[in-house]
Figure 1 (cartoon, rainbow, N blue to C red):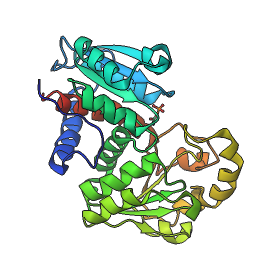
Figure 2 (tube, rainbow, N blue to C red; figure 1 turned 180 degrees about the horizontal axis):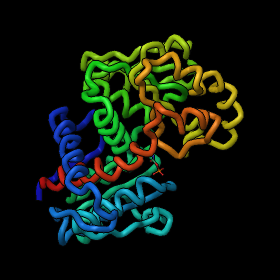
Figure 3 (cartoon, rainbow, N blue to C red; figure 1 turned 30 degrees about the horizontal axis):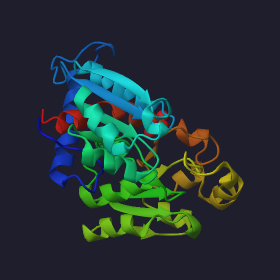
Figure 4 (cartoon, rainbow, N blue to C red; figure 1 turned 90 degrees about the horizontal axis):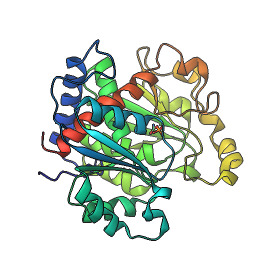
Length: 310
Ligand code: CP
């Protein structure tokens, strides 16, 4: 079996990322009009077992991976980190070695990036990053696919991120470098993204612009993106302070009006309506948030095929 881990956007080559997106779109087209539970004509995961490990809550990642595996002929087992020995002292390395004797592919959503990397180092089957505190590559693959479905190639477009420089932003910064778009960050200095993420985009010739004024940042944008103000790994005690810091960066109709008339709006969900984005924007003409959610399914199916060399 070929071993392709899908750990991050910056650690996957640009041609492979492009092939995954193109394949995702082709697979989506091929099953247009079918009930969700009906199998694809092509069954590349036939006879394959996939472990889906969650150390954090999930709706989209859990359901889209599960459905995607089944559509491609495979089977899944969904495991909660707490219920596994992993949550009771067994090492990640031993867990990886053991799971590799039972399953053909592992998807893990975890807290520390180090857990993902250790899992990948010791697994003898492909490992997929289903989100860590630092990155969320599957989400951004779905987002690139969604943008291109609606507006064509994302290369050269202006993408503006409003709010917290979090793990989803990190994967956008990596994608800016790999797919060649111009990314701006607008948010308070206290919630700036990590320097290393910006350095990656810059190293690929697409430096990220930082603009503190959201009105100026969104001027002429092709795509406006935001995310929840308090991430799953942020302490509850930080909520009020974060809300105060981020209120000025809410995506509302007035802010969207500064973007291009045909600009798209994205949010990876779950959202806190009328905090980071108003319902008028989320349900408005620019919004493609539910296409993004659907495309998690198609993008991840293509990621799994790539991981397995199929
Ligand atoms: N966007 C996303 O990853 O959603 P879930 O947390 O529901 O999986």
